[in-house]
Length: 221
Image (cartoon, rainbow, N blue to C red):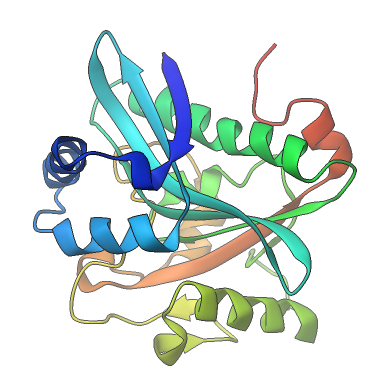
């Protein structure tokens, strides 16, 4: 599997068309406007290829939100099949790799809009994940949810106590993980009642410690 990260503005029209076709293959047709918006909102795109075929993509950002270093997941999806999991985990690991370089010796907040158990499973390896079953978030954690909702431009539809984004009349530009397995009972609890077809999502986040990033978080030896 070849994983490459690059500036999103370097995507050519033919590549954007290819990404749109990949989205359509997982049930998200007509996302051209969302793809163009992500090029503006997320400076990075991570691409996963195998034998010349694009397996997955994800827009992302390494930035500081209120002074805190963050990895933000944008719109993304993986082609159906046995390579969906490795491709998506590889893309997440690539952003961890870049964060270790960009934010040395700092803990990093990792956040995204999710609606599938497989996406929640990608938060494994992080600490203090929010939301999580049986946990009452602190005021600061709810404040983080609001900050992230503003960054993702969905604050008008965001419930800071449930960490949920209500439907906006169309698909949310989230990390689609409908082709991934994982998440378990925790994911089922957190995402209960969330309907991605209606544009609903959960803003979830956790912390990648400086030590974990230094030790290659997400990369298998």
